[in-house]
Image (tube, rainbow, N blue to C red; front, side):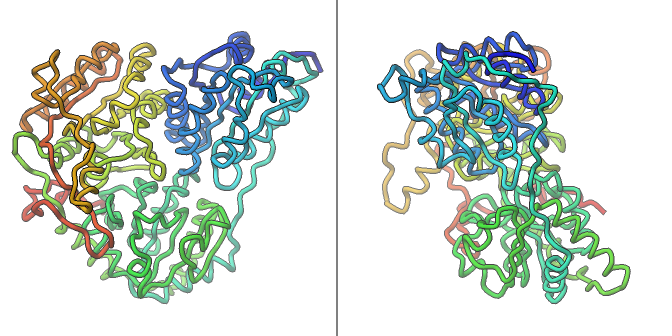
Length: 592
């Protein structure tokens, strides 16, 4: 045992727990912790321009790779409250991030001291654990508990608040005797899984709904193996997109009111049994429950017991880690296949594949200004199978989910439930920190892009290259479309005549000048025929200068994107594809 400051113990624990990537900014109340990071040397730190941005960077870092836990660090008061949106985004999508805040001295917490705020109470509803550590001796145990909480059951964020005098205090601590606490995850029993398979094989048109819990469990390969063993179609949720490659024969499309495929909704509506694994029946996936559940039996497998029955009561609920459940189901399915007792679902699979080959939205428009559908068509061609897409909310994200292609887990990184504007850019920077070898492509509308545009400077300073596609219609497009129901268009236009940049033609902000002023490279595209060359140039610039590259695409101002209030009643505002040339998505080569 040896005497050391609590912050030195904390940094040593972070390194032993494998959390070695931090994003944040220093300040008086957290400077002792920064001093410990400097002295210890095991934690890499990226200086953000805004603490909310730092929290989204930590979030993107955690989402990008199995086992990652990003750290967000900030000084007291406003730094903690700035993190709340980041905590919400991580909490909503079951992402483990660790937020560490400085705080006023313990004796002054009730005296309305400068930048003293009860961040523990504020953060508790959005974390698995929030704690202001009042005793120096509690620091090692609090960090140990934090990692156990983040990793156990349904993952999620934790906030630890450190008063400055607690940071400076000395304690007895020996990192060599420190051990991470065991992580608890429920496992489905053989009896439970046997019953689930009995229900599945009693059906004519079964489907798997694959949620983000499968990605969290690192079990996408097991999902594909189960689907292939049973020979049944898979519907990934938005958070589970990539669990099965888009061009796999058993990938039947996404379902929902917005981020869905025409063939996905049609395939789902023909099903009679659904087994949901690691999903939460989000309302934008299900739409009206009467339509979604009619004529179907349901099994729901989720790591969080209280999630089962939260939206509707399944016919069978099983509390289990998705990976453990899939392993058990594969074993049982192989036993039944060897015994010749599995039904033959090949006709059902062929029926779903036929819809997948024909029910597509048109993407090949040649209009000027550019129609957004064409942008996603060209992105598919330019970035191919290996791209990692990052997006959050808006018509850009909805259309992207309808028309882009994803071919593996963690290649669609999306703040699904919270959808905070501004998340995309900083999250993409966190993704680049996690997987610097990847081609990272962010997708934003102009408003999402403007929210935290200052974080581009972080990418320039620390050489974090990615391509940021900004589809600019100078509108709050999704809000404008939703206001149609009120027969109004109120406070949703971002357009103005920019006296300093007349070349923006009334679209307002000159994103190219802003991006270049922040140390990045930027291109503007106004003709759809120029998109392929622009994406090629962006890739070249990214490789040469190792900074973010913005590709701004000037869109027509009003395009209504397909959506509805029921999965059997989606409004298709644009003309639909009649040939493969109209929708290159229809020509996906299916795996054997």
